[in-house]
Structure formats: C-alpha cells, structure tokens
Image 1 (cartoon, rainbow, N blue to C red):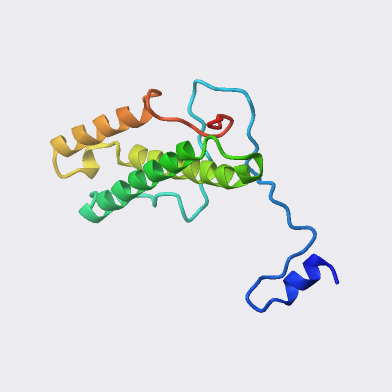
Image 2 (cartoon, rainbow, N blue to C red; image 1 turned 180 degrees about the horizontal axis):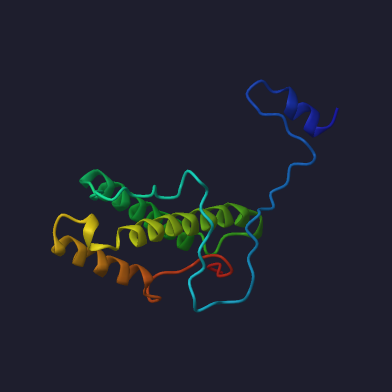
Length: 150
C-alpha cells in the first residue's frame, strides 16, 4: 500500500489524487511594467451600476475601507514571505493573485464613485479624488503580477 493510498484512508483527509498540482494559474514573469495591470473581475466582484439618484452610503465607504485594509494585509504577508523556499512559492503566488484582484476591485469602485453627483457634498468627492490619486500613484504600491517579491 502506497503513501497516497494510506493518506486517502484517513477519515479527516480529503482524497489525494495524483493529478493534484500546486501550479497556479498565476504565472509570474520577469518583465516589469510601468502601467498598473488590472485583473478582470468576476461578475460578483464588479461594483453594481448606479441608478440616476444614487448616493454613496456610509456602509459602502466602510466596505471600501475594509478592501483597502485587506489589500494592505496581503501586501504585508507577501513581503514577509519574500525569502521563502521554492516549495512554498505557490502560497505566495496565491496571495499575490488575491492582492491584485482586491486592488482591481478597489479601483473599479473608486472609478465608479469618481463623479460629483454620487456624493452628498463636494468635500467628500474631493477626498475620494485624493484617495484615487494615491491609489494610482506608482510609488508605494505594487502590482504583483509579473513582479514577485524575490
């Protein structure tokens, strides 16, 4: 009886098939680009289209804040694993892909909200423009696709 057969008989383990691969669909390349890459968003991740009388709610602002925090946490985790061994890199690639998708969702939301008519006051809109400018600034933000930390 081989290792895989014994592993499959354990009641708390998922079945292990020989076709299981740790390769990711996220393929890193050595090319670095000066333009930010945008990951295509799944239909559930795209911000909904807004009706004509739409106003941004405080709950939506909190959700955007949570997305920004999630991206920051993923970035910190990726940077902390920059010296990982080769066999652990699929974990880092997964985090890199997640971070890029979260960034794409953040930017899609910010671009949707970058209109004065969706805000209660022009001061709020000015704050969003400042946030967008910081997010689009190349300094201090990294697009992970094709740009691993090692």
